[in-house]
Amino acid sequence: MTTHYNQVAGQSLHRLEGLSDGVFAFAMTLLVLDLRPPESISVHSEADLWRALVALGPRVVTWLLSFFTLGIFWVGQQTHHECLSRADRGYTWINLLFLMLVSLVPFSTALLSEFIAYRVALLVYWFNLLMLGLILLAATRHARTFGLLKPDTPADVERAILRRLYVSQALYAVGAGLCIVSTGWSIAFIFAVQIILAIGLRFRPFRWL
Image (cartoon, rainbow, N blue to C red):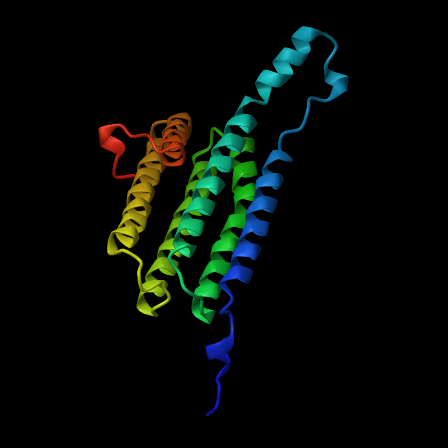
């Protein structure tokens, strides 16, 4: 019986997890490279240094925002992988697209920190988040359709993963929409959503996250 390439390619879930960990770690490291200390030529006193550090505020905010972003998506992908018994070629390529978008986060972060008052920069950043969510959703659907889940995976686990994806993306969209009022409000809202998702607040309104 002939074995087709698609039947054997991309089936190692462990190799995919290793690659994902490496890409996430590298992207998280790149984020901090946008935080550069003030130029010594412009600092002549304690007051100058304080002013220079305060001027770094937008970059610190976007660094924190994106570090939470990458942490949340890494945990989401890891959680889904725990439900899988194997991978296939389609699932592997979907996750490679996901990692491509992960590697783009340092760029969208740098763009936002450099042009933090501009709506276009905020929308580019939000589009990066949107595509991460959509690709992760596609991976989840693919795993169900092609029987990659462990047989004993409870149905409510998959529902919880999907619910978290839908709700978080809806909240990110609300945050992006706030740029009509102010990009500052947009960033503050998205940052609040990130904290809720990362810490897992157990106040009643957020228990479904």
